[in-house]
Length: 515
Ligand SMILES: Cc1cc2nc3c(=O)[nH]c(=O)nc-3n(C[C@H](O)[C@H](O)[C@H](O)COP(=O)(O)OP(=O)(O)OC[C@H]3O[C@@H](n4cnc5c(N)ncnc54)[C@H](O)[C@@H]3O)c2cc1C
Ligand code: SF4
Image 1 (tube, rainbow, N blue to C red):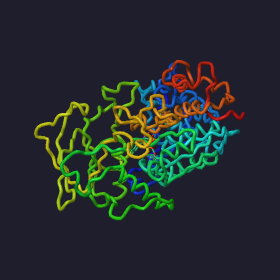
Image 2: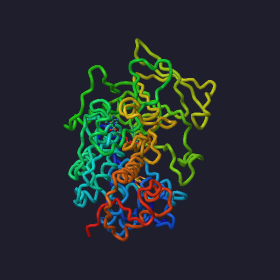
Image 3: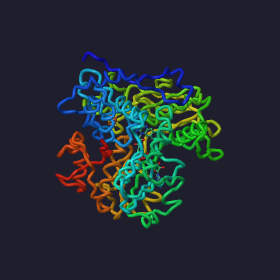
Image 4: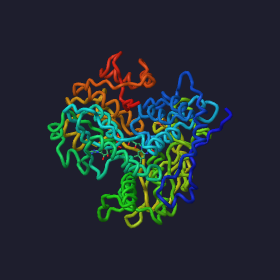
């Protein structure tokens, strides 16, 4: 390979840690086109399989290389409603599956995706495209995270009326209140929400379904209801001292930080209730848990001016090549050796388990723990003599989420849950006629790209339930092969399994070809 991988241009961590602006940017067009040229257009494109949306990666790589950006955008939007989100924050399982990753650096797929959609917005190619006709049927979507936004966008395209109910003050779900602005500036969400509104979708924010409005009311108002409520129930740290002041769930901290940035930028945001502010300023911070949530806590704590941040990760270190034996190529590793947050400061300690939080005058003062060995939560064992105590005035618990909240709408609608507590909806329909589920609420905490894919597939099933629009989109010939028959991961196959299309039907949910 004569052209080397050239990733995103990253801002100097010593500078960017003082603001909340995006920490990376795209290289120039010539570099991007050269990066597109690195794609080998493999006979079996594993990257396409690696992407939960089945994005048509070799196609757009080639189009970018050939300076045909507008066609690349059509291909991109054919499978992905929101490439501006995934282009920024997807961990890119496609790149782990790139054939080049076997013995070289993978193609910069995510970067090229972002470049295509950025070009689309800059050139004015992305504009509201409301449906030509309305079916007279209506759908209530509960939750406005990426799954809720995707299901709403797809159903609206089919002409159904869609109202998205959101308990927070603004749409976006974890995109808005979990992910920091340094990774995803919030005007990007607002730009997409405005397009969706212009296409006819209604957003009802500050509306807790099961609280402000009864879930049963929604069933009366709409012909179908989609539960896209995420998986928000925190896993807790069951150790002595958990009740001390200064010990908080990571998400409570992240919500407050994202609202702080919103206020700084003049956007409306809920105030923090008196007495419940969480601040890292001037404090020794310990983050418990080594996933995305933990890293985003580090990023915020450093920007607030913490006195020091240590992240304790119970799992062992990753091999230098970043590929543990449990995730050989083409599987994506569950964690990565470097992250933007650790580049900015803080320290991660692998193989460290917290066993107690020590208090002084009712407030957290330190965490106690020991070193552990093992590869999964099932086989971890303490290492004798490895006990430690780490000063900690703020302890943030970021050890994951168990399942969606059952209290409220789920209980009210008497929905079934599976063995892990997620909403039971094997083919998106729940046991209650007219009620569907998708996204993290159905499959547990995942990724933005998976949530979008969930929303798209669910929309097919809901559309079928509503009688199907019977609308056959005009399909450009080069767009047809997006859906390979028989491929178990393809949208077409999923739709067939869900009996929303049969072999031979036209199957298309991308933008209409206006050429
Ligand atoms: C801190 C953090 C950082 C992350 N970073 C990344 C990342 O960098 N890249 C990535 O790919 N993934 C990331 N993820 C995972 C990703 O954000 C989620 O998998 C994705 O947002 C799930 O989408 P969703 O729509 O299913 O649920 P959510 O995004 O959780 O949205 C659910 C929505 O439903 C609303 N809701 C819930 N109950 C009700 C109700 N009763 N009435 C009205 N509204 C309700 C909630 O307020 C919320 O807005 C991160 C997750 C976290 C926690
Ligand atoms: S959405 Fe994610 S997995 Fe799919 S092509 Fe983009 S970066 Fe890769």
